[in-house]
Image 1: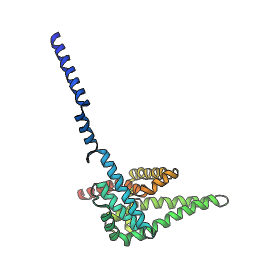
Image 2: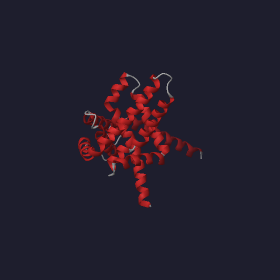
Image 3: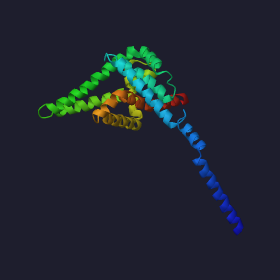
Image 4: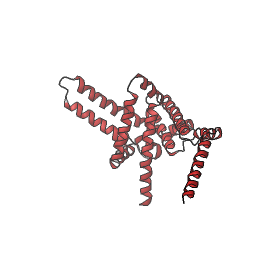
Amino acid sequence: SESGLRMSALHIEGCCTKAAFKCDSPFYKRRYLMKFFSVDSPLYKFISTFWEIVKLNFFWLVFSLPVVTIGASTTAAFSVGLKMADGSEGYIFKAFLEAFKENWKKGIPLGLLNLLIAYAAYLDFELFNKLEGNPFICLVMGILAMVIGVTGFMYAYALLARYENSFINTIKNSFEIYTRYFGRSVAMTLIVALELVVMFWNTTTMYFMILIGPACIIYTISAGALYIFKDIERKEKEA
């Protein structure tokens, strides 16, 4: 009936008025702010993760200073990065130091080989640019070295941090995972490349890179690698 419709309209208007009063009340605002800044809020989680990455980056830089230990330091950082991606990192320094001690024997040669391949790629590109006639063979060798470096080492440090295996098998497994999960691996390579472009964009971003750059890349790869590792482990259990 017409009176019934008017009553419904009045009832709805009353609800709207109460809701508006509730939203504007100081109690509701305080409650909203408390929820926004609580430990479960996205803001808190972002700040917490950012701070963990800053600390991880600092430890990586310090333990990589002798250069020769960069492989062991990177393996330790990946060990922490995998735990961060899984939400179980605990105390960063303790986890980093334990992983460094556990993996330094295999991590050091892995890092040295990685540096050698990276330098070979850099040298090939430099020769291509500076030699007269721009020899095509230098470009081909540079691209080949870069492909070997990316596919052979994208997952190598994460594999070494998570599994017990030989030095050679770790690199082989990294190459196999890259080819088996090719689409996901290429996407992750592009994300890392984008991070590098942003970090080297100008002087300001380069200072920012020193603060979190390497650890940010390590965390990115760790998150992608963890998904793949768990998928492989699940398939092995089902087989």
